[in-house]
Image 1: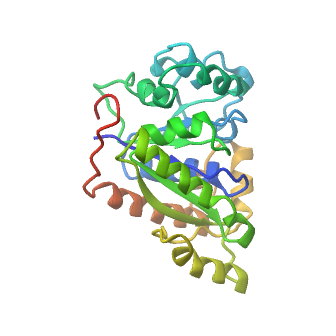
Image 2 (image 1 turned 180 degrees about the horizontal axis):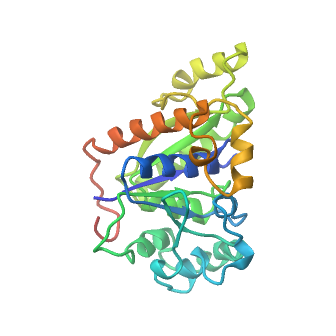
Image 3 (image 1 turned 180 degrees about the vertical axis):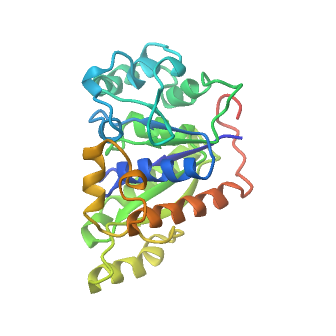
Length: 268
């Protein structure tokens, strides 16, 4: 059974895309078949995996708005994961989808076009830094949502809005959606501030904290320049080790019984 996980936070700069690429690569190392879906018009995930969006003729935009089969746009990457890439054209998808009936189910419908003979174990949805149509559609298609959260006080602003959106999605389009927890990122254990923020996350949001926290390290900035994840560019670094541990935690979490949904289209 495919596990679809949305990684979402409408605040930028929280290592969301880095987390998608790194968790995907770590799951692939475990032997899982993984698809990453870039839903950000800035195409940061696509670029960070060594693919120039400007060189692409087909992308997730065509899948969501033109009826293209996903397999025609999916690209194999050197990190052992498949990618449904994005381009700047995706910026038009929000406007295109706004006028469509059932727009919240656009990603759900698109994922039904994946090859059933060779199903993915994981589909990771890299949501845009907003709470617009694409994020709502991703949450509607997902089994769970993981919230990367920078270990700084200001990064907490807006998480309540995201949780309100999750609540609405549960009510109207995906009763089975579960919040898998908060993933602390950019953690600097040398500072009292980071440690204090980490300690208060669970109490503040009454959410599970996915551990270990992802450390702040220059190695993450170097990886996209090489077009690979940190698991390839710096395999033994503390950042790579942390994401491997997080992937193991998520793999164990995926084996829990899932909430039943009566509002979702299609089968898994």
